[in-house]
Length: 174
Image (cartoon, rainbow, N blue to C red):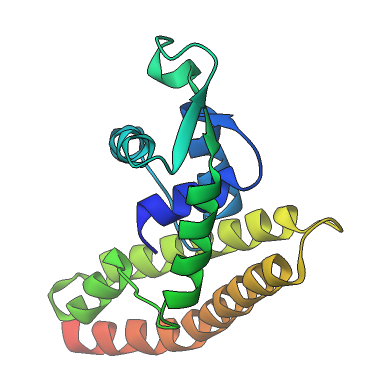
């Protein structure tokens, strides 16, 4: 999902400073999207210039203190983007890239990568469980539950296939 659409979606939940918006995106949407400060403020500037977001109060306040609010035009644009959003998933994974080329790794390095990924997945599962609350919409619950299922399946897969990979790498290094 495009970062501008993500910002509009996050602002649907209420006005926010750039800092609060970044935290909202990285916490609430972290299972499918994150944002850095360096990419957030230019997008907010473009959304404001297009009239999709407006700044409440002091427009001369520092970037991290300006309060942004979605406009009716922004809400309409967001709805249209949700309708047009294809159901595909794009995965960009440094872990999968390193496993693709695991044949160049020492067994200890490959094991460390698998163990590190397992730890990250378990931390992501804990964060997703902490997101769940009774006020969530059905769509929000589905999104979080789907992310939980995917991460739990990845943990189970890595515990089995990770062992198989380690055995193969160890056999090859002998």
